[in-house]
Image 1 (cartoon, rainbow, N blue to C red):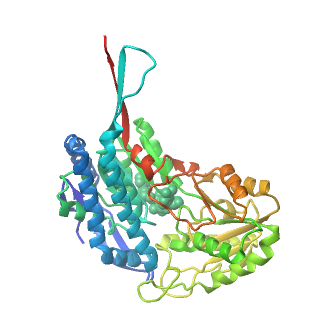
Image 2 (image 1 turned 90 degrees about the horizontal axis):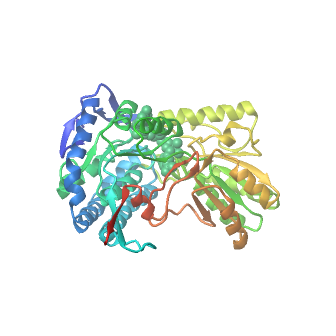
Image 3 (image 1 turned 60 degrees about the vertical axis):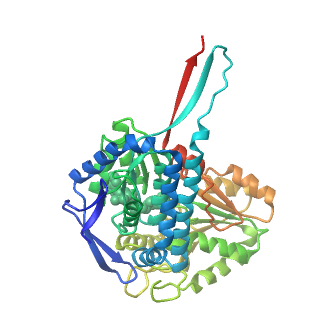
Length: 476
Ligand code: NAD
């Protein structure tokens, strides 16, 4: 794999100094490599997007919609290959890889619909003053840099690419160096569909390539998904040029279980919220708040459910949970196991790496974790659940909100009035009530507090790539 960068409608070899090694986490072994893009190639990609912008922004809404539908169809045609690649490079169980594929397809199909509606969204604005008319025009922001992480590569890129292209923006996408093969698909589809050269560019590389893109003065906007530490660097680059940013960052989300719940049903939601994608979800509900009246019933059942999960290689075994996606992530999670041992936390399940090849850890549960433990406050990004008990609704809300993050939360209660009340009080961007983490393209995605700035998905995801222009005319 040498021609790994898609610039101005052509596949080119990387000219950077970094070599990117792509691994199968279930074996802990590399299976492909590619050379990173050079800074000069990042320049070329931005220049290509800039050149393509005047034409692409004038393309009719129905043509843009047709291209987006084409992306959805072509993803569908590559279904099996993309599912297998996600299983191999991310370590996702098959059913999760399928959901990711379906999500990406639905995202392109949804923004095709919204692209088609764009002309009707330019409308007259009623004025109180006489003698004037005013109209809005929703224009594309321009050339956008898109930087994404490795945990949901197909999906996270779709959530940015589809609305950006629908809005009439041209883009330079930088996938994660951990999973760069998956997004190559978007370049291949652009080729197949005959998307005009330069509308979609893909440059691969590590931090240096990301930094070259995020600090590039040829961008009109940057949309970043990733860690808080890199997010703040990206925001600094953007602030130097007073350029808008969307930031989708980390989380340390709560799942609140009241004592009127069916404990078995609650266990199912809790397990899904911490073991999907081996817990490598920004939205992992990694802080369990369980009411006193149900804790002694629920915790042993949760312990048993976590111990029962089948952890293994998704390509060769029937599994509920795969490995962590990278060795770096495996080492990070292991460091939290060490901290838990040093802090003397009560471990009810897991708490260790698996003794086998590959980057596996056991689904883990710590009980009665102190509020000041690093395991309670920091994003671990692995299948590590920390539990605390609470007595009252007010206490649950206060503890759930006591975090620098504010991405999502789940509330489990048979009392729907109470669940709604708690949902209102939670300082997060998305709340699930009595549900697994179902994400629909029509709803928004994004956080409050340290979890980011802006929203993806739904009409908000499109607005993130639009600029409002008003035209006011004097009738006199
Ligand atoms: P990361 O911040 O290390 O990397 C994200 C991307 O930034 C990668 O493409 C990387 O190459 C690039 N990058 C690294 N250094 C850079 C720099 N100096 N300048 C510009 N770009 C740079 O994150 P990760 O480890 O890939 O992903 C995990 C993180 O992403 C977690 O914190 C998770 O919560 C977050 N995340 C958030 C959401 C959300 O929607 N809120 C979704 C998925 C993941």
